Structures are given as structure tokens and as C-alpha cells.
Amino acid sequence: MMEKMIFGRYLPMESFVHRMDPRAKLVVITLFIGVIFLANNLLTYGILVLFTFASIFASKIPIKFLLNGLSFLFWIILFTFFLHIFFTREGDVIFTFGWIKIYEHGLQQAIFISLRFFLLVLITSLLTLTTSPIDITDGMESLLNPLKKLRFPVHELALMMSIALRFIPTLMDETDKILKAQMARGVNFSEGSLKKRAQSVVPLLIPLFISAFKRAEELAIAMEARGYRGGEGRTKYRLLKWKGMDTLAALLVILLGGLLYVFRS
Amino acid sequence: MKSVKNHRLHMMLNVALFASMISILAQITIPLPLIPITGQTLAIGLAVTILGSTYGSYAVILYCLMGAIGLPVFTNFHSGLTALTGPTGGFIIGFIPCAIITGIILEKTAFRITNAFIANIIGMIITLIFGTIWLKYFANLSWTSALSSGFYPFIIVGLLKAYLAAVIGITVRNRLIRAKLLPFPAKRAS
Image (cartoon, rainbow over all chains, first blue to last red; front, top):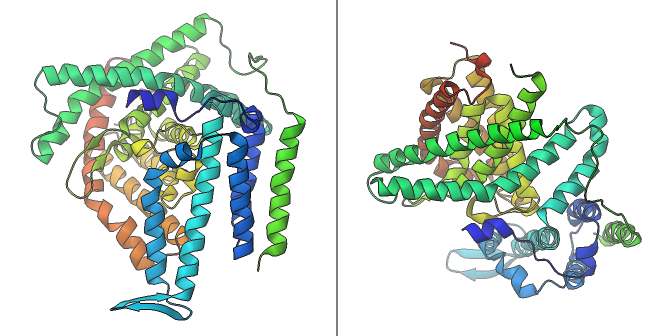
């Protein structure tokens, strides 16, 4: 449980996609999510598949690894597939077996919608596989910067996010410790009636929350003591650099959108 | 005496820690036949019950953002934008209005167990409505199939979670206020 949490799904490697500016990657993904809904026939879906696999290839992430991480989504995709195939009743009947009737339109719908979902998953997981969470946070902060004019607390949000990230493993350790301590005192978390199990959560949660709040208090004092004054005039240790290839990638997605718009039926 | 700025920083840190707490609790499951109780909704209910509307919803928004940037914080280590844009994304987005409304109800009444129970039930229904509507349009389902796969199965478990969130949330809140760790008992209407 711990290992999965700490490392997230980031896979540090050396590739074109890894070297891209996190801001560019966020822009590309946002555009792609809009573009994907333009596809509605075989040709446009073909272009999308091509684009997706080209980006996977450019990231050098092994396809097997990518698919492994998606095993949980397999069931959701299968679920939507079957819902469409059985509940869309338009077009010609192409297959009958007892009471099951599969319609042409249903089959088409099922394939396209599952495919759209699958591609969406592939592209977005590419972002998290090639960019460390801290980089994404930085990218987000910088992209949301214009919102500061509207008094939206961009810097605070980014700070809270990095602190939350940093404390997940710590609190995880703590949960583990409290769990063991309470088990040693005879609390049984995995057996008994529903009421018993619900009750057993209480001695786990109360100390956990109290220790978390204590940590927040200590951290606040420590930050105050070191002169933290909020976002104004703060400089950055790691600077983001927008390069030519980032512009290129963004343009590529816009081109993709144009292609789909032309070829959609 | 604590300055205003210090109070703000303090609450920011509380929100941050709560967001990581939600991520951890989302991984804890109490195994039950049919539908297991996951800690995700429970933790959201707790966040709002303990922190109130404003900070509770900040914590929930932060949690959703953390999931969006690809940390495996959603139940069963799901993560990424796909978790938000996928067919079940509505349930996660629905946490935000759920947190805001539950918190407002609690602040307008009082932080007591019965109120918290009712507020959490309303919040749960909001989440489920959001999730179901999203599911319907995303997967092009009919209303009946969307309701039977996204709404009905979760009601009983949801009631149980609302009860747990109310009892634990209020208990923890009172403890924290007593320990002077929660620096905003001002909104305590009683």
C-alpha cells in the first residue's frame, strides 16, 4: 500500500514527452479532451488512435506497463460496452440468439464509446506517467496565474497541494501505527457484526485526526518562525521553461482537432 | 494572541492535511457482502463535519485536484483526469457541492450529531444525483438503468456512512475544540 502511494505512477525516463514543459502537457491534454468528442466515424477514430499511439511511442513508456495500470478500468469499459450493445435498439438486427438481439447501431455505439473512453484514459495516464506530481503542481500554479487578478488563491492552492502530497506518507505511517496499537489493545477491525466494525473505526480515527491537527499546528508555527509571508514576492527554486517543442506539441493537437473537424460526418 | 495571517496559514495547513487524510481513508475498505464500505465518502463527510463548509470544501477540492494530477488518491488507487472525466467522474465532482451544502446546513443549525446526520444524508443524495446524471449522459444510458446502477445500490450504505460521519465527526470536532487545535469555534451556533 505504502509503495504505491509514495511513488504514485510517475515513471522517470528520458524521452521527448518527459522533457516537455508540464504546462505544455496540461494544455495538450485539455485540448485533447475537447478534440476527442469531435470524432464520430471510422476515419476520425482512426486518426485519434494513430495520434494516441504516436504519443505513447514518443514517451517510450512500455505499452505493457501502461495497460497493466489500467486493468481496473477494463471492467468499466466492458460494462459500458455491454450496456450499449444490449440497450441500443436502433438500426438493423445483425445477430439474434434467443432473447438477445444485437442491433447494428448498438454495436457501432458500443465500440466507439468504449474506444473514446479507452483513448482518453491512455492519454491522461501518459501525463501522470511522464511528469512528477510536483512538476504538475508547478505547471498548474503557473497556468492558473492569471486567476490571481480575480483574487483566486493560486499560490495558496499550490502550497497546500505540495504540503498535502508531502504528508500522505507521514500520515500513512501514522495510520499504520495507530492501527497496530489499537489491535494490540484488542480492537478487531475485520470481524464481528456491522455495528462492531463500525465502532472499531472510532478508536482509529480519533487519534489519527488529533495527531494530524497537531502536525498542522507545529508546521504553521515553524513556517511563521521562518518568516513565511504568503505568495507575494516569493521566488522559485525550480523554474519552468517553455521551449519550441512545447509550442509544436500544442499546435499538433490543434491540427488534430482541425483534421477531425474536416473528416467528421 | 494569534494574528489574522497566522490563523489563515493555520487553516491552510489544516486543509492540506485533511486532503491527505481523505486520500488515505479512501484506501481503507470495510469488506461487506455486495458493496464494500469505502472510506472515501466517509472521509468527505468527516472533513465537512469537522472543518465546516468553507474549509471542508477546500479540502475536498484539493483532494479532487490531487487525484486529477495523477496521485493515486481515489478509492483503489484510481487516479488521473480519467477518474474525473470517466463515467464515474460525476460521483467525485459531486463531492464538491456535497461538501459545500452539508457544511452550510451544519453551520446554519448547530454542530450536533442529529443535525450532522441529516446534513450528511442530504450531502450524500446530492453526490448520488450528480453521479447518476453524469453516468446517464456519459454512457448514454436510460434513466432507469442509470438509476439502478448509480443510485439505488448506494442508498443503504450511504445512510450508514452518514451516521458514522456524524458520530465520529462531531466527537472529533469537540475533542479538537477542547484541545484548542481547532481555532475557529466562532461559528458554533449553540
